[in-house]
Image 1: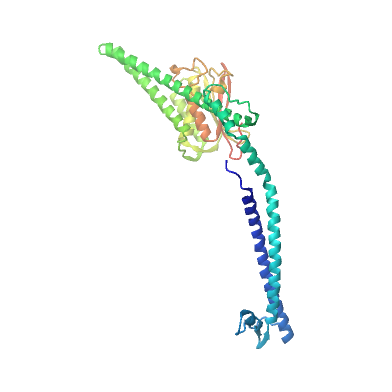
Image 2: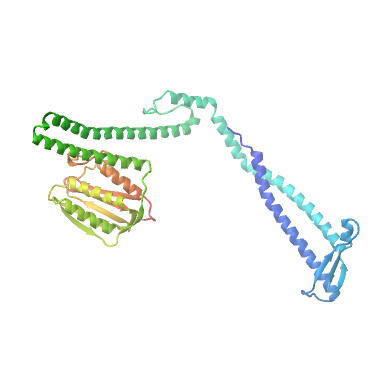
Length: 415
């Protein structure tokens, strides 16, 4: 580990502070010199002319012979046709400036030394910390951790513990990282397994009907029609599943490009309610739409989320029962879209998992109902992209109410 150069840091800080102080000294010196010259000129004019006339033309002139000091001694000040020697004044001024400069240099040097040691004292805890860290992270300690890591299965539930109290913080960090790796790996494995299972079913159905058609379909028109219909149905299911998997994969990789715009949630709710009332004559759709409910979002994604919620309500609500669709603002002023069905409901222990991929909480929620177990997972992804969240209330054999709530910009806490 690189050693902290305490002297260099203290010196740099002290120099920076005292350079600013030196600049202040220089500005003060210049101001004093200018003030002294103006005061002398004013006093000289007062003594010669009895008053000061600002409009007069004034000038200084150095002597013409000898060394610079001799020339300064012979310098003159001219005003209103009068010429006065100013050599004595300039000699006295330069002497005073020289003395003042030496005093200031002495003050600056003493201040530098004092500031240096003061800052060095302030930095001493860093030096102590560096020494303690160097002592802690010895080769032997790292060998202990390396030995622990090399001897364990990173996907098992085993945790690192070297028995060294000084390494407890490092062990906790590594164990937390391992837990996250195990969780991510398990989620990935479960997703791949579920996706493979979901794809295997339609492929098996298609293969079965293709074999049946090859054997008997050429001669039996009824079998031919049944096989073609089944293959088309399963192909559509598989196409839908693949599209949903691609959507989730793009969301996981952050590759969704949102086309955000201001839109009317009231109008979109009206359109969705009319759409489902038209395509689903087996249920009664009622709507309760508050005017002027506005949000900012991607039109296609918000519409897809609405359709997923309505489609779920349609699947799990018995024929003839009512489905209610709402658009409103809640008591916090947040824009909401809500679907309330009269269906089979969800068990309390299943509600925390309904947005998990491929999760089905009830035997009735099967492929025969047309579901893939990915609809609500997609809806959750869309909600997350729009800084929205779901409120879910459900009672078995009574129904489910799912509310999509769009947070206000000034209210970011989770609800």
